[in-house]
Amino acid sequence: MIDEPGAGPRSSFGIELFAMLRFLTAGESHGQALVVTLDGMPAGLQLDIDALNTQLRRRQGGYGRGRRMAIESDRAEILAGVRHGRTTGAPIALLIRNRDWVNWQQTMYVEAEMPEGASGTKRSGVTRPRPGHADLAGAVKYGHDDIRDVLERASARETAARVAAGSLARQLLGQFGVHIASHVSAIGSVVLPESRVVSFEEAQAQPDDAPLRCVDEALQQQMIAAIDAAKAAGDTIGGAFEVIATGLPPGLGSYVQWDRKLDGRLGQALMCIHAIKAVGIGIGPDVAVRPGSRVHDEILPPAAGSDAPARPTNNAGGLEGGVTNGQDVRVSGFMKPIATLMKPLRSVDISTMSEAPAAIERSDVCAVPAAAVVGEAMVAFVLADAFLEKFGGDSIDEIRAHVEATAEQVRRRFTARPPA
Image (cartoon, rainbow, N blue to C red):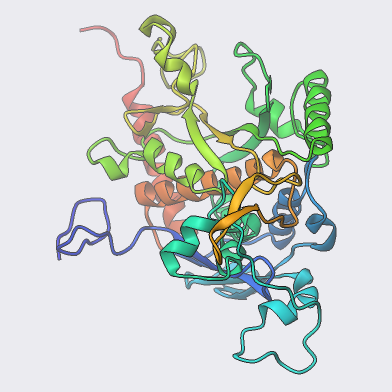
């Protein structure tokens, strides 16, 4: 075994054997349920189950969603790791049932033979992969003849489990004054102006039932029109969102190894969300076209009543060298259009290798607002992991003592001193 300071033990092959916080999900889009196991949560966290289920409802909302959202009403059931409303320090197991399972039992049964009384409709196999989806690559990788074995797991339905795990991470962060919000910044070519910097308070103020959670109402109506036009054309449309985390202390993450840089960890967390093709930190791609004088955030003496240096801008998105600097962390995700088109693109039938239109699965026209909620969950999870890495402890009380001691050290460090 090879150990590195501040990291989990590694095997001789350099593979990290555990993180501070981790989760695994399982389940298919039209199977019986989604399940998630969350490991590493400290003991003593009082959970708000209603808040968890509120996050699941938020993921189901947004203009442009498909018929599936009218069927499902996601709620998480906690099966393990919580007693009397508080975490015990043991792994937490959650279950989210698929209400649509009743319509798919004849297609998605687990047994070798269809059970008696299986409900729903027996559907034929899927052999026409959708361009832009995991269909073809997944079928080749795992040797499937029926692409349903790919698309059921590759479906964005899986993100409900991520939101459940992220909600618990979010509640952990909330104990220490860290809060997270998001807003939609673009739908297709309708984009918030570059000069429009959205504050955390503005993003947080967007109601959960807002069509797209865009802070500019006039632009939001243009976005809705763009979604309607895509739907009328049998097409789909993508966009972008920004996740903002406020209240973070400086010092989360590290610059000493590539895999401990927090911006890299956040980038991976957003890139692994279905259909996300690019990620930006702070002003993102604009850093490539601006001069340094318009990119780097100046450092000024503390303002009155503050014990930390002032930063008049936050182009870096709260991260410098892979480490939080005390400003809001700002991460953007850029989402491609959904791969299922009602007017399908050309494809092939993999059973004959002849040209055929791509398969049509029930889907959304636009899912950017939902992706933003998933983005919040993934950002919460990564930040909670970095928080535990920095302040470690097996219980909330132990972590709180570490946080308070570190905050006092930081205050003393930045206390004004007369020049020598």
